[in-house]
Structure formats: structure tokens, C-alpha cells
Length: 158
DNA sequence: GCCAACGTTGGC
DNA sequence: GCCAACGTTGGC
Image (cartoon, rainbow, N blue to C red; front, side):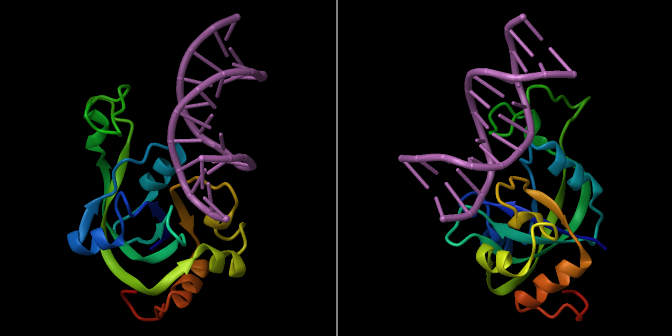
């Protein structure tokens, strides 16, 4: 089981939305490196939900990957912001995953807090200028994030 | 609103 | 393949 970090602007889709919906397709990723990480995900992996463009930005909760290898339908939709005219159903370019609500942190683990405790080499999101919306998190760092977020990493299901 | 970082595009 | 122009991300 691997851990990931996934960013979203809550004005577009936030943890509140996911808690309400319980499950959502993580569509709209249009960066190849991020897509490649999405392709590496497996059912049962966990992802930290990071809110960007918020005051403060930070990790607000945890989700579970519940379906993988899904062709992102928005790439074929001319009315979508995520439409990709170079993609076709015969040759899709963008795959993604379905995520399910897991747990909310007891407080937002802010970017400032992350920068204070974790180095850029350990967690990409604290690196200045990092624009990657999907990135891997090592088990060791994931456990530290869970503890910092008020979750107990030793309890199964967290 | 500013701007640094960085990805993409397209002319050559 | 290079690189300038341009667009986007996202913290501040």
C-alpha cells in the first residue's frame, strides 16, 4: 500500500465536497508527471488531501483510492475546461482514479507546519515552486503526517 | 494582485 | 533539438 498527496482548490472541489459525495472521480489532471503517478496508483492506496489557494494552504484529510486506470471523460468533452482536442476515445491521453473519503485531520496541517518539520527532499509539496498536483509520499513521511494531523497511524484503516 | 517557478508550444 | 514566448500554478 502506497501513500500519495493530491492537491485541489476547495473552491473547485474540497474535502467538504468529498465528505458529502463520499466518492469522486479525480478528473482534470493535465500534467504528464502527475498523470504518471495516477497510473501507478493501486486500489487501497491512501492519499493526503491538500488544499491549495487557501489561507492557510495545507493537508486537511485522508482518502482512499478505490478505482484505478479510469479514462478521464472530460478530455473528450468540448464544453469542459479539461477538454483535450488531441485526445480521442481510441487514443485517450489522460487516465485517473476514483477516491473515497477517509478521515478528516483534527486540524489543517498547514504548509508552514510542514515546512517546519519536513524537508523538501522528503515531501515535494514543501518545495518552493512545486506545481505538481499528484506526488508520492514515503511510508515514513506518511506516518509523520498522520501523527501531525492527529490520526493514529497504528490503527488499521487510518 | 504580484510574481517566481516551471510546463507547453511553436518557429526555426 | 533549441529556445523564446506564453500560459498556469499557487504561495504570499
